[in-house]
Length: 411
Image 1 (cartoon, rainbow, N blue to C red):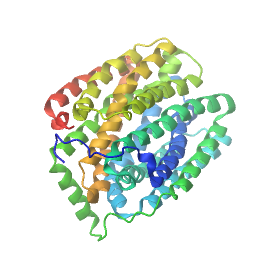
Image 2 (cartoon, rainbow, N blue to C red):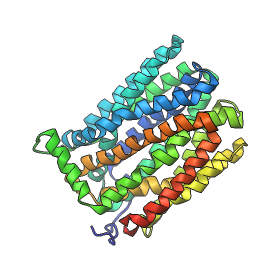
Image 3 (cartoon, one colour):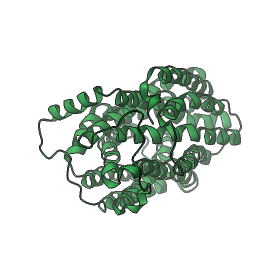
């Protein structure tokens, strides 16, 4: 499809597909379990370290969680093209449920050592390397081309509503008021349900009917992506959130709650929930009508996101912080939804898993950079200055990419 072309005409409601509904239900259940980890693991760490060690230890755990993806995500993309999607998704989510069970034991036994956190983080990172390309790459098989953008948006809405809004809010209340053991138990149950629900997706044969050497299949995917300026531009943009936005925000959210806003633990869930709510509302609005000049909107979103995240960094009142995180929603929704939809629309079906692996790699390879920067910067200047400096740098880099990349021409 040319850069100036618009998506094919036809019915745009992906919920008409039974297999898409099954995928969405399973994804929401899985995201609820994953979203609880945003709150439960930092609280587990908080109870075992001093205040000045909190941000570095959280950053260290997050870096270890993302590192397996750096080495395994490209392999995960090949496996996604080789393996039946529903079986791969079932097995990956079942492993994540098992990790949550281990946390139940650690919390109930009041284990004080921290090394299991890093080991379990590495397992979760390895699971995501195979789960993400399979979950995202199967969408073009579940819906028609005119339904694809809304399928991506509704999938992201479901994932974000569950993982960034409902689950963190729930985790803050359960973990803070009932106890971490109960929160981990809820997490394990939701992930187990998600694993079983993925089996309801229809049987789709692997894209690679004839298997070759892994290296040859991987090289084919890399060569294909390298040959498309549009795909390379979309992949370059995918590195932005981890370095400048999501990475710094994840590391500094708990220090902001405890050291700047000085509020109860439940506010950790409320703030993550506000961020998710802004994305959800904006994403739903995006489904109501086709958007003009989607490439330009996508390229502008990191530029606009920087000043909005700066408002959160300046917050010293919890409700001001909630408002700032809600305001980031439109930019984050445009970025998350349009980057994936445009990438899938411009990728050949036979290589979808491998290109989705590259897309996931850009996230998992860039996010540790954001974590590592915060590991050094936050103890020196504090969470507020760390967030503000990262946000403004992201906005400047966004302007450079807006001018340089041809993505802005995509329709």
